[in-house]
Structure formats: C-alpha cells, structure tokens
Length: 55
Image (cartoon, rainbow, N blue to C red; front, side, top):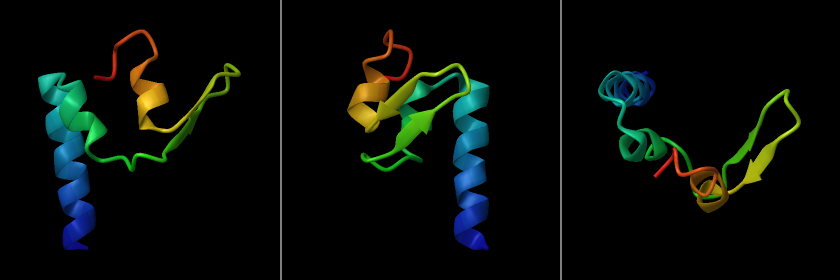
C-alpha cells in the first residue's frame, strides 16, 4: 500500500507543478499509451516525441 500511495503522491505533485519530466517517472520505458481518439504510442520515447508535451 505504501508503494501505491507513493505513486499517487508523485502523480499529484507532477500534475500540480505541471512537471512533465516528473510525471514521466511513474511510467516504464516500455509503456503503451492509447486513447479513444485512435492514437497510440509504444514506449516512453515515442510518447515524449508527441509534440514535446512529455519531456
């Protein structure tokens, strides 16, 4: 439970501070991100390359 709480604390901090680099630390390099708008990103580097919002 402590690890899960730490994850949410990092998420909350990153969003509050608008810190994309901190936000990215909660994901594995092989993350697969997808949305209902038909876009997907395979891996953290691909997600970072999306318009530069995730650095």
